[in-house]
Image 1 (cartoon, rainbow, N blue to C red):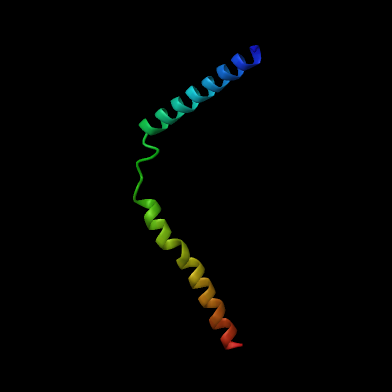
Image 2: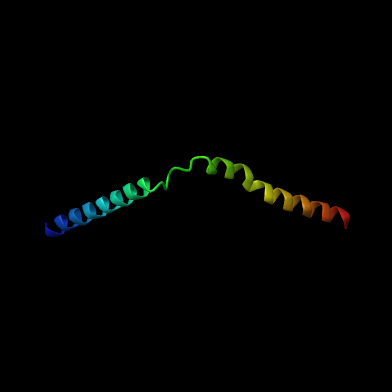
Amino acid sequence: MNILYLTIFVSLILAITFLIIFIISNKSGQFEDTYTPSVRMLFDDETGYKESKKEQTEDQNK
C-alpha cells in the first residue's frame, strides 16, 4: 500500500512541475507566434520544388 501512496505523490509532483513550466513559458510569450507556422507551411516546399526543377532541366540537357 505504501508504494501506491508513493506513486500518487510522485505523479502529483510531476504534474505540478509541468504545470509550472507551462505557466512560465506561457507568460514569457513562447506561444504567441501564430503567424509563422502558417507561412512556413507555404514556403517549405518551394526550395524542394526549385531543386527538383533544376535537376529536371539538367537531365533534359544531357
